[in-house]
Image 1 (cartoon, rainbow, N blue to C red):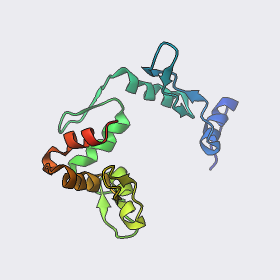
Image 2: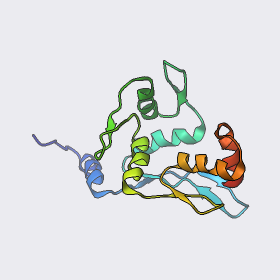
Image 3: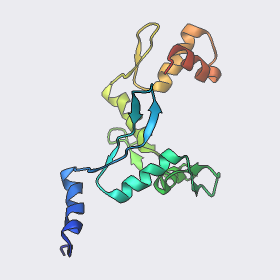
Image 4: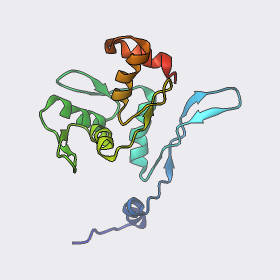
Amino acid sequence: MYSEFKLAANLQRPQMVHTGEKPYRCTVYLKEFNEAAHLMCSKAFAQASVLKQHQVIHTGEKPYTCKVCFKTFSLNSSLKQYQIIHTDEKPFTCAICYKGFKLAVHLKGHTMIHTREKRYTCTVCSKAFPQLANLKRHITIHTGEKTLHMSSVFKRLFPS
């Protein structure tokens, strides 16, 4: 069965999904570098309603709350994605070794083990690692500090 589009505008919206067109752009300023230069968000969206949802991120408002741990979120979709943390469900599976992950980002990091891609490089000795956690553990060789305090060490060695 084909969808019916009574107005031309209603036809254009679904077509943008297929064409990749994203005419709705976020114009919120994130940071001011100096009087002349500003950093703008500039994320683009295919639908105005999605842009509106996105812009809540910039207000700092977090109206969605996890009922288990009370962590708050700007977007309902972020809350829904997060809630899997409180379950045993692991919907993201590695196609190579079939290991399961709760979050897609964790699966993405894991797949670098199989591809041998090493994106994280030690600035002290140039040794490279597939995962950030491996690099953080490695840095203790140079600092002599325990891994419990790695966040402060990492910030000192790799200032953003």
